[in-house]
Length: 333
Image (cartoon, rainbow, N blue to C red; front, side, top):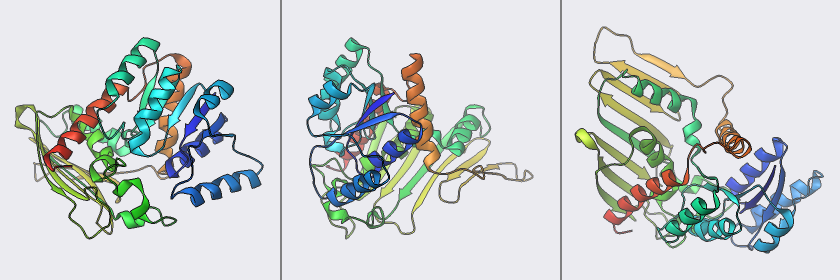
């Protein structure tokens, strides 16, 4: 198949390499330079030296008309997701939109109308739904292993200075409020898997904002409480500051507790019965983080080829964005 990638930063390059390894035809739409330009030029130079020159367009409509992609990948900064997606949708293109869907509600209704009218496939890129231990955790919860969920805790924190050693984090959209940055949207993976498990909350309360010594004007630390039906309560912590990083998801139920630790690479179930030995599950020995990105792409391509529903449709991306914006509103961001 043929795919046009709009944005070739770190996630764009990952998708490019993965789809290239799967044997698909690829092209790049590049809007301009920016702070990330040296990193991009290095990638393009390496591909050319390896005998794989990247077909590059600087005019979007020309890219659509000339390359005629089966789908467009939106991998540019968060604040430009919707404007690029709308351009592609108006041209009748299927879409893979990297998380988050956007940083605002503006344009969402138009995109949904276009998708429905033109029968477009639109998938949102939340790759953690393909993590083997999260899949197992969701199955165990659905099967009643922990009984009725009573409360849950999510902690996600890592130091943004460690993300991309090739660039100054202060020059990236991740720390810029107008660029769609901030811990809530950039760590919306953790909001997405919460939504995947439990759906939409009935009430949100949050505190936080620009708290750490880091540069930028976007929120860098947030604590939120989300209340679901039956008074099921989730505490959510997100921050740009922690070192070493941490990512954990704990659910406490009437029969026990289950905890996923991303960095420890394990899932632990503990029964309320003190005579029961805890069960610990680990990721498969050959598991690699990139496997999740490959699997989500394979699912998207399968949906395109076989006219199936995508794994994470537009409406789910809109719901996760609604939760995210609800948290940001609470903290004034």
